[in-house]
Amino acid sequence: MEGHHTVGRHRKPPVPKVRRGSVIALTGLVPAGLATVTGAGDGNIADKLAATVQHQLSNDSEEQLPEPEAAVIPAAAPEPLLHEAKQVAPVGPPEVKSVAQPDGRVPSARAAGPLGMPGVAQDAYENAERILAVENPTCNMQWNLLAGIGRVESTHGYGKIDDNGYPLESVYGPILDGRLAGNNVVATSDGGDLDGLSGSYRRAVGPMQFLPETWRKYAADGNGDGVADPQNMYDAALTAGKYLCSGGLDMHDPGQQTRAILRYNNSMAYVANVMAWETAYGSGISPAAAALPRI
Image (tube, rainbow, N blue to C red):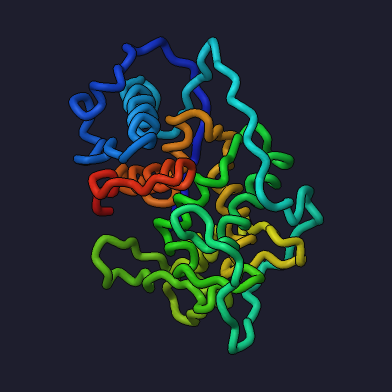
């Protein structure tokens, strides 16, 4: 579930270089089994975590971003996506609301995406990547990172989505009133129109699990219908991308990507799970159980 995090920039002296093979020995932030991914995913996860540890060893505070390296190898151009983006430029502020869906809806018959994810979910993640490439090109958002978030947060809307991108069952998190161990207490005066609660506490909403107040701040219209609905996969994927990219973060930088993921859940085990699924969806190889520590 998403949370709040503020970032800033600061120059700092160089710090010792952390070798990839020394990650586990050098930091207590990395849980056991974090860097183990089957097949081609193993190097990707370990390299990202090595870069994260390197950042943690610096003198930066938690609210600071690393300076870019002096020499950066240009990233390869992304391969063409299967579907055209539904929206490639802002069309004005969307109306923020949840739209009631009719009874009798059925799962989309679109072919499944990598590792069995609903094809509509893949389309929504790719659509968000394409829009963000126009609106915020320096973020370098990749669809499979959004897919990693969606997998960990709700298994892509419980795995059953209609042709319009709505889960067949609305997605809600637990009520954050302090009764569930490991969850924060979130009290608010929000009217409850997004999470269906009229009391004093909130719960996360939609397949990307946003708190209502945060949704209102970053709400995006991913399918071009003029509405930003947290239950809609297209809207939720684009809003998640905006949230991760905010503050000038670059998803090509492992340390900055890690910081962005921690906004959702301030846990390195959570980061490990998201990165494992990100790599899995990019490679088509399922993550090993050891790469998915308990959150």
